[in-house]
Image 1: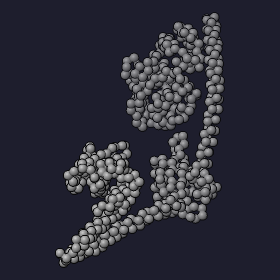
Image 2: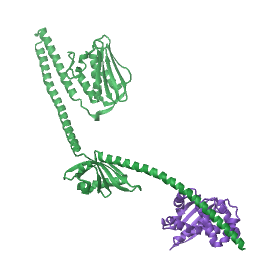
Image 3: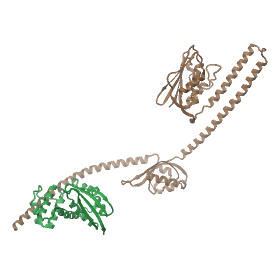
Image 4: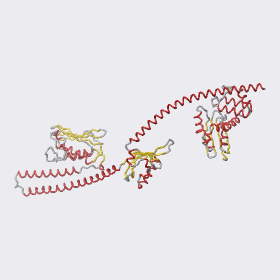
Length: 403
Length: 182
């Protein structure tokens, strides 16, 4: 029995010994593993440290070099950090221990609370304008973009903001607005003036016209053929004068007005023009391909095409006159063309013809305003106008309209 | 299976049945490890099964009862080695319902090769908890022992109802109800 017990203890000791060795082996292996792991960690720690250092100096550079004022504050609004631009803008330094509530003028506190709530809930606010009182007591209007700063548990710990002084900018904007308003008013007045003047100028013309026809009636049979020819010339000149006044009025009434923009089908416009113009028998007007629909003022676009086409009719000198309307399309604009086989225009006049009162041909019906009206309308739609022409062979006018 | 499960088991056998019993069940089993266990090693589950079978043969105590007592004993190991697991909780229901999503997650961090059962929470109120235990090891009684001591640890008077969903004990329903908190 005692021997059995002894054997049993021997077995137990052998097991314990083996277990101890096994444990030692495992632990040795583990500690080796740990050693290599810690070496690896050392290396990656060093890399991380370097990275942090690099990032820190990068951030410091950004912080210092940022042109706009940059401010960091804690949740109760105490300013924790400012860059140089912020110190310059506010007139304070971090040591002054300023709070947002002291900066923002009391009248704005309610709006401030609202925006802070929004910042807290959404994490950021953009384009927020508020009035602040800076160190020297002056009131400045500032533009703020701000965002929350969170800790690793996603708890908000601070807020950061880029602040821009827009006091001057805003006052310039207000000045611009008032100038625009004034300009609008004087434009209106000018137009009204043009109406009155043209009416006042036309009525004496009509009186002269009437007086001349009375003189002619009263002296029927008594006047020499020369005098009658002179009377006819007076009448023609009066007619031209009246046309001139009408054209000037028309020219002055072309103003940009976005409210009258509609989608205009140019094919319908062209039909109207062809009906209106009464082409002489020997002139053929062709639209090469169906025209597009464009967003313009219906009256002005008709005026534009009508003036170019009637010019082509007026300056046709061939036995078979041809007028061709065409267009090309790009991403941004349409380029329209009106081509004729008329007398052509000398290159030296290609710029001059668009100026007001410049007529190359002393024709009776020409007032020299038609092309300036065309140019003014094209300008209104941010387009360009130019021409290609060969004397004696014909002219092509091109103009663009933005899409 | 982690070595600590073996060493603690043999400690308990020695404490309850004496040193001879430890020698007997080790000697009568055909063990790849030759019955040499260290807490830091890892051994086959079949060895634990042989030891339990042998102990059952020698003592006549049913295996599930052996596992239950062992589970209760093992709680003290947790208490001693990982007190932080227990300190995190103030309520036994909270602790037991977090076995799967918290405690086992932490255990895997310490023992990446641990083979753990799953505990799926089916129902949870302030005083009741129903969980489904699933493990090919069919050691739910070990779990019951641990739970029993857990409830005791938090001074809770409670009952644990264990129902086999699968007859072989690989899927078991635990229904815990707390009657009073001390």
